[in-house]
Image 1 (cartoon, helix red, strand yellow):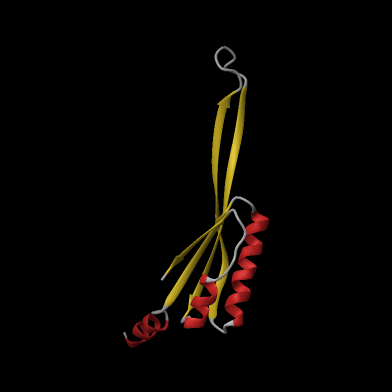
Image 2 (image 1 turned 45 degrees about the vertical axis):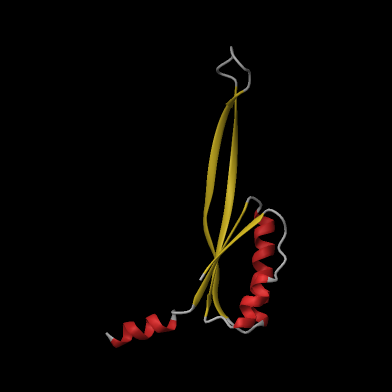
Length: 111
């Protein structure tokens, strides 16, 4: 029982960062800048963990009315990464808020 409580206390203060992007090169570049920022402030972290790629498929008729067999198919891929920061300092949080990431990257931070 005491072992479980010590594990809970260990992970009590945690920040989870989820990063989403359509382009895998941009998401890898932004993850690297986030990790470099975390390492500069000497905080412990897990990741980046690649999450499953979300694929959305759209089928559109080529012509407006008659030719039902002629269709175009489009696919939109959303790449995702996750980073966990354990026991972050105030300096770590401040550095992460002042981080400048490229356009097209969605960053979601949960405390």
